[in-house]
Length: 451
Ligand SMILES: *Cc1c(COP(=O)(O)O)cnc(C)c1O
Image 1 (cartoon, protein in one colour):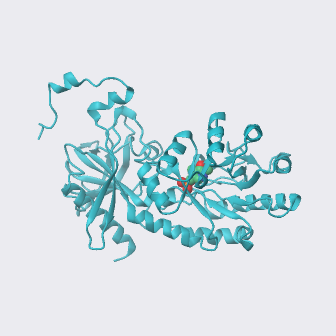
Image 2 (spheres, protein in one colour):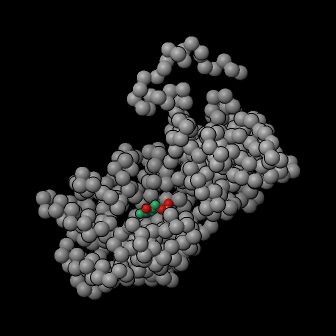
Image 3 (spheres, helix red, strand yellow):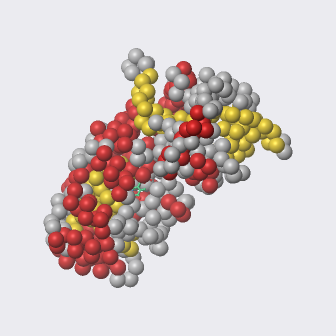
């Protein structure tokens, strides 16, 4: 079997087992997510192999891609670091056991309190602006810190195909621009003034950015580091944080582009990054580590035909596929049709809408998609959703967060699930607002008698 058919067959086996074990249930568990823990280990291993010329590299997983603490713990156990962008993500990274010196704090809006705590903990900090630089300098006057401190530069190399994911346009909100008149010179002076400023960081963009563009962004950061070294002495810049942004193939199971292909581009565009191991390297990949190692599955509750269009109403929609629902052309997802046992459905392809449960017309996982005709009780599988989907739920319509199950497959083929996040109980969501649950009213109509 090819790697690709293996991936689909693996999803099918996991799904069948999940149905058998009741992790998916047409009454009690309408939607669930699954994370391939073996897959994550294999992907992380590919990442380390690709950067094997830089054995000291710190690969910091971008927590926003999947911030579930058990997922972060898994990545910590695999030797990764963690890139965080908010107090909440920092708290999760610490809860996952990452040592502070393997955590990198990037945010364009760090508060004084966040800065104070990050520096006290020894978490690496990438400064985003001149104003933030002043705050850091003030803080360090009062007490020294073990934190590695860098500055995020905006290489201003342009954007990719998705504007919202392009962070190196000339007017991006991130970093200190390198090409604006006077900006580079001002940053050079800052390196002269602040001996604790020792790293350079760039993150050119995410999904939609071609590899040569991302590599050019890194090349600009390296070029700036060399300029600092030339002015203030070799070794003045200790390391380069090259950010993340490797795009993911949402059209099929092939893992492309690979980390190795990206390193090939880096070696061409920014050879000094690897030369003489002069610079320590930090990376911040998110989507490329997790996306293909997770999928969701949801039941079809009803089907109908409207204006000749077959429509399947499922339990997965905007609450777990927010970007896809609001920007379907930019974030298309594959859909696979399975029967109630989890087995892939054969049959002629019929164009149909795959809708979510939320109360607005645009809540579609896929529109006019050719699939075996879905029926009530079938399951739809949504691959490639391990990053930025179910881990980043949207609480529209009080739709609950689904359970997330990790899985591993033993050498003898046995599937073992572990709970990574419990499902929210839709009948008790008022509790999340700190308001007492309407237990008395609900007690009058007990759950679980609808079968
Ligand atoms: C979002 C982000 C990343 C991760 O991007 P991916 O496309 O998920 O790899 C890394 N670094 C920074 C600063 C980010 O904002």
